[in-house]
Image (cartoon, rainbow over all chains, first blue to last red):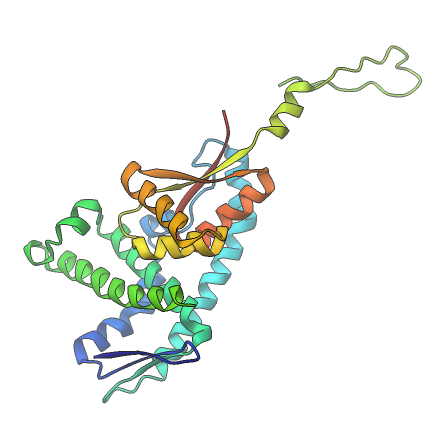
Length: 160
Length: 104
């Protein structure tokens, strides 16, 4: 798998193996999870319950805006994934879509962490291989893989 | 907080005007924007978000990022409530754990 950054800020990832290809195609579905734990993590209250009126106003006015923004980001990611062929797949992320990818990768990581109660202990000990529950182990692996791609995108943005 | 209902018009000749100093003080008291630790958000990502939202240098952004990571939270901005709300919204948009509270 090769990561390339083009002069215009676009990203290209080629020689994608089937495993990484499958994980990356799962990204939109994971990112838009709407279970209670994920919703609570993604849509926070600004005062954490200390000012109920402010939190309620926030839910009514700010949250719908955030939902719209998050949905727009997801649409761009889906668009780029749709253009990725099944055989010898290459992922092309235009410069104008990089922020949407960073957001969606981060959202997917947070969603997985919320669903599987993944915390500091899990991320610091890097004991993916010691996790006995195969589904939780897969969630940890996805968090790491999406994190690797996110790290690459962040570093391209640092150079701007 | 001092509250009063002004009695206006001709039927209220003895209008009491109370100075609502506590409210004025409350309005003047700055609001703090606080970012809380989250074990999932990448340190590099948090640094980038601070640079973008607050226009911090990379060095300053990293200092705040480390404070979040090591102490559990960092006060990243302080000032008027409206601006604090704007920053919290931006931080939530970037999926960082952020709250606002009035300074003590």
